[in-house]
Length: 205
Image (cartoon, rainbow, N blue to C red; front, side, top):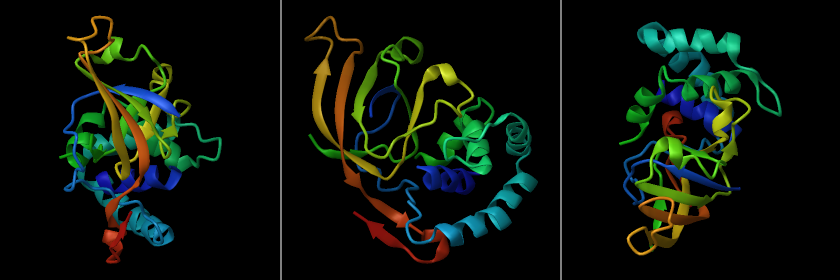
């Protein structure tokens, strides 16, 4: 599932905000393939091998994929397969499984696809411990294709790197909307596993 979903997101891939738990580092052990210079080869490999294998071995994924083929709506340059992949990813069925599979004043990466929101009040639903204000160059607005359109979701790729611009604490500012708020600004991309499954690993910086 991880290979198929990663490829479809990267193939389709803004100040946004998100709130969730992660280590702020370069996530060197993450799956961060950007599929540069191997898109067609990976597309064929994924469709003919990885998707078929996952459908045959993972009943939860198979059921979610079949449902998504009925419900997902392509458009705005997004093809049917990409729309299906985004619908599956944002559904409750495999979201946590997928993140476990691909997830394991500095420059940092999220190290996996980071689900964030345009909604300034998103932390009301998702928590108020550690939150982020993110200036992303490579994040994709997938709100039209997400299961939960009201969440105004923006998907940030694992290979995008950010510089920590500021760190604010509620203990010093009682009006702060989260206990800790990091402000991150995109500074480019860094991929250690680009085209790795095609036996053509290129580090992208």
